[in-house]
Length: 266
Image 1 (cartoon, one colour):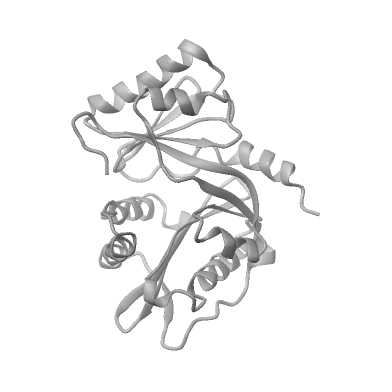
Image 2 (cartoon, rainbow, N blue to C red):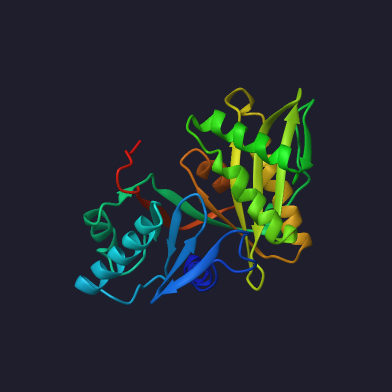
C-alpha cells in the first residue's frame, strides 16, 4: 500500500521552492517566508506549507507582494495547496483582490512504475524540441487548444532552455505537419522529482493514447536520469488518466491570481 502521508511529506520538503537554475531573465527574491519569482509573464509567489504568520501580519505580507508587483506594472499569482496553513490564507488572499482559479489535483507517480515505451497512433512522430520556431509552434498549439492567449509559453520555455537545457525536456507529437500533442518535463536537481507539465492535445486527436504516450516517454527519461517521483498538477480531464496509470493524489492546488491595477479579469 502506498504511504500517502510519506509522499506528501516528501513533496512538502522538496517541491515548495523552485530548485536548480533560475530561468534566464528571471530572479528569485525572498520576503520573509515567501519567495517572489520575478521576470516572468506574471509575478509568482511560492511559500512553505505553513507561512508562519497569521492575522494582520499575514495581511501585511500579502499586501507587500501585491504592492511589489503592482510597482512593476504586473499582476501576481499565489499558489496554495489544500493542506496549507494558516487555513484562512485563501480568504485573506481573496480579501486582497486575488481570484481563485480552477482547482487541480496534486498527483505523484513512481517513475519506474509508469515508464514504458510510448505507443503512438499511426502517422504520429514524437520528437524532442528546443529551437525557437518549435517553441513558437508549441505556444500557438496550446493557445488553439485552450482558447485563450498563452503565447507567453514560448518565452517561458526558451528561458528554461537558455538557463540549463539539461533541466528541461520538451516533447512534441507531430502529424501532417502539425503539433497534435505537446508536453514538457522539468528536472529538479537535488530532489526525487520530475515535474510533468503542459500536456495538451488537439481535440480531434484525443482518445488515441497521445497523452498516455507523453506520460510514458517522460517517465522513462526520468528513470534514465535517476529520478524516482513524478509530479503533476492535474486538471479534471487529466487526473483520471493519470490515476489509471498509477498516480496518487496527495493534496490539491489552487492558483490565486490578482491582475495588475486597471486590467480587466477574463
